[in-house]
Image (cartoon, rainbow, N blue to C red; front, side, top):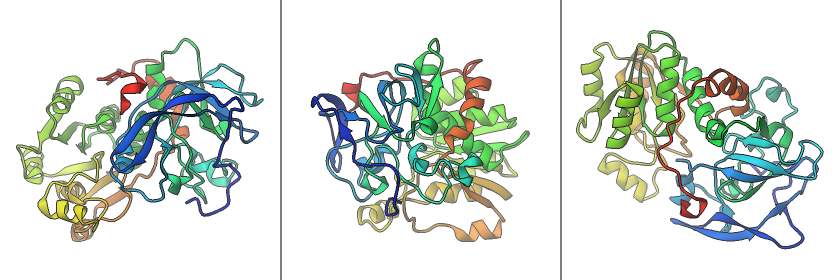
Length: 371
């Protein structure tokens, strides 16, 4: 990723007065701490420094926490973002306006937003990935959003101006969760009448279930093991659920519910949590980074010619992938990639979030408690 030249400075300037801020900092495997670090200053002409007023955690934080990524250095500020206010001498965006930033999906085009690919609103899929906020030095070493201030390069493309009367929690999820889940549903081609299975009922899975309903799915079935998630999916979203802690044979259970098989299966789960002993051992021995068990279940549970979308963050290799099922059943296996968040920003904000989107927030904690 970051082996190629970039026009963005990965090492920031810091405020000349030496002032510091609170930040969640990575120090090693399973070792993150709330610490004080220098506040970044304008480094490139098109930077903006934002004050964080709301941020989130993300399942992808576990890549760092569990040692799934290479090239990290202690003092990396981690991960996903935010509703915020800008404080910057840059002429691009006026001081003290409210913004939403997109983090994991956001910076991968920081030095190439002028390219043909970005003119097609495919911001994640250009010639070079210049960097990702808070996601190891393998992706540039840019500080993340679990902090008080963040330097945002290429602010014109990485910031969305938000009206002052809109609450943070209305727009916070434009940074990742809503565009990512929407992209999964749209990119995998969920359409009216489809029966959709969703593996993983975390925030992405829950929102994907809602988007599938909005797109006209006739039935949505969520697969998870955590009672609180299953209850919320059943009671708040009105979808069917499968508890794989009691229904160990998920594929069999799916065919009991849908004898002809699913039209679409969406993988919104972590690829790092092993179900079987054999994959637990392989993970322990570093023989694989990701497990294929949920993807294999998906391919077995969809009908012939069915569609499977992968939005859960896979970072490496998985052993025992059922390539035979993929070929023999004629399955469309779609890697959704990191969502092109800015492509969907305005549509989601204007068509769904402002009119009627019902928040799925369950926990609110101060920054100090994110450790």
